[in-house]
Image (spheres, rainbow, N blue to C red):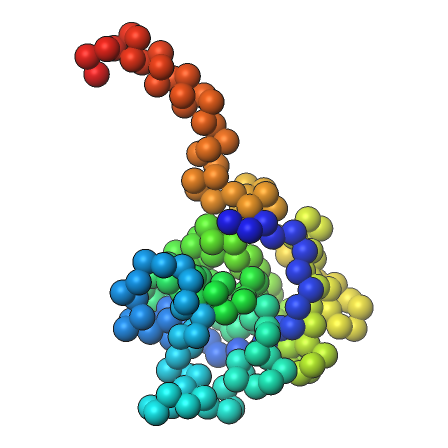
Length: 201
């Protein structure tokens, strides 16, 4: 997966609590196992009306947020079913970072496995970042994973915590397969030795 080191991008405000995975990517789009092509269906029921036309008042349909790379959302983001299509859809749209006070555990874990950085902040920090994200074309945040900071438009920064192992994986673009392949030599050596010692296995 792509490395995540630094990101400077527009932040879109989604001032809603309990945004579940069915809202992120509705169930009718779960038939595919491809990680691409889901971005156009992200938040489909909020983005489009029954005729398929865009709803102009939804944040990601507004001109200043169409290229958003950061999503600032309220409590309990990613709750509901465990579908990995949710981070796939976010990533395919272009979202590389989601900021909230809390995330559903499975969604949170799936983000790291797909190159998305989920950041937990306090309620006060969320309010400030939500205000920043509401500034339209000036809603630019600077995310630095190495220093674990969010740079705000006013020059202030917000620090965040992250598990060191997950941080290492994002910085180096390592998903579960990539982590396994780092030990490919040792695995191959073990298999060869096992064939010699247990040829019947």
